[in-house]
Amino acid sequence: MSGNELLLPGVMPTGEKAQVDEKEQVDGEDQAGGEDHADAPPATRIAAVVVPAWPLLAAREKLAREKVARAGSGAGAAAGAPAEEASAPVVVMDRHRVSHADAAALAVGVGIGMRRRAAQAACPEAVVVEADVEHESALFELVAAAVDTVAAGVDVLRPGVLLMSARGPARHRGGEDALAEAIVDAVAELTGWDAVVGIADGPFAALLAARSGRIVRPGRSRDYLGPHAISALRDAPVGPGWGHRDQPAADADRTRRVDLAEVIDLLERLGIRTLGDFADLPATSVAARFGPDVAQLHLLARGGEPTPPQAHHPTQPLEVARTLDPPLVRVDQAAFAARPMAEELHGMLVARGLICTRLRILALTASGEEMERTWRHDGALSPADVVDRIRWQCDGWITRARLRGEQTGQITRLALQPVQLLPAGEGAPALWGSAGEAAQRAGRAFARAQGLAGEEAVLVPVEVGGRLLAEQVALVPWRSERPTARPGPWPGSLPRPLPSVVLRTPPLVVLRDAEGAEVVVTARALLSAPPAVLEVPRAGSAGADGIEALVSHGVAAGRAHRVLAHGAPTVLDERWWRPDGRRAARLAVVIEPGRALVLLSREGAWTVEGIHD
Figure 1 (cartoon, rainbow, N blue to C red):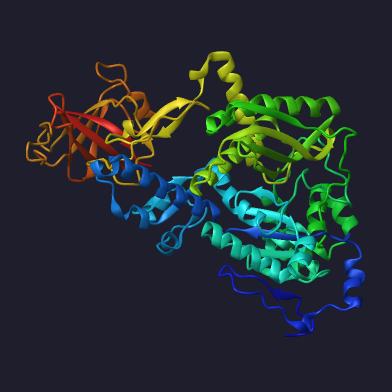
Figure 2 (cartoon, one colour):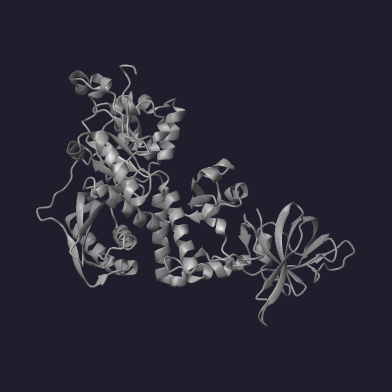
């Protein structure tokens, strides 16, 4: 190892003991730092605990729990639930894009950022699930509780990532390598999951060090960050909840929000490829050219710590507490109790002109056990944010008690304590990109629309399951209780990828052969003749409901379309054992000029069920 090597192997996911090279001890001259390090203020020693691919682990745990629930109720066996579901590849979607995929799915071509249809086409046997932040947050409480057994005072940055001060716990454990090893062992023993620990000066370097379980020597965070690609700024802990010492917070009244992806793209086009290239730029020039937001990122690249410039400490500590009678034993009770507490806390902060960016939630159980957890937030915590975190945290505590067979699940008292307060003017939008701000604007618009026109004014699709395409998705009011999913399996249902357009009112069409006779499906599930023409009636004619939807997707009305290709019919026997059972057949066809349709035949009449892109 050369004298300039700055990284110490830390704790790997397998829980192996960290190996510290004695030859890499830093002398007093190195710790003092040279001219290149003088521009960044000293940073706190931080330990980052990361469970890799946490959304994927949480999704697998949820699938396993649902399978056990079906087996316990007998529904899984009755419906013939596939035994291979537990071993099938898993793909997690977030905002209609693949956010995480396991090794099996990645091996066959599924890529991060793919759309659902492309992922399902690449790996049809994969189980595709939507990201569930509530479940991820509640389940991550098990990891936080495990780390608590090693050192108290951990902060949940987001589900899957914990931050904690490393200096005190490391002295208690006999060194940073021993601390990291103890954390990894505790998480593995108490939860069964593998964690990685990174320790460095400042949270940004610690987060990057946790990717490979490394310990960066004190005073060397800037040199460790230097070789990383500039795209690593996507993981930067930025926003009003962090702040920084060198630059003032961005103006709250700015009209345009800085997008991290845009900043990274701009820096790359300017020839800045690594964090070291970025850090070598003069800080004053970066601030003057790009503004305070990019200056904050520049501080991070230099190894600085984005701590709040001015944390406000009220003369009287703020706290909102409630004694719960009856005790809280279910998550829905937590949501009911959380709303007035969140609104009261918000009113106290507004009256003082403050915002909260770190919140401590405390609970007292019927057995006298006290529990607490601190949540960081990228920006000001709104009442809705506080309600979510109370619900997630209570769900995590209740779940932990149930899994361990403890009798401490009944929560008799809840309290909220703001840990980090900033002036309201410092609550500028964060740098995580525009998706969060856009979602908030959409949420406010939805809430206003429901307030003006009723709950049914805003409907969102929810997958519930069924044989027919229209039955697989239900429309429910926004923010209302979701209907119970019917997992199936559903014999005769279409394999994925499904049509991108599903017609709620399937329009009638006529399928004819080359001789002009109507094509039907026989009792032996065969076509009476190869289809040659698909006739679409004119809009407004009898039985032409839904034709406008076909026209809007490129299928002209009032004309005959030549059939270019077709598949074999699939018979659907619905409730064949009951007198009201129905029989239908599904057929896929491709018509000019290359539009793929899914047709459904019932009692000799054809309708258009869905349209592929």
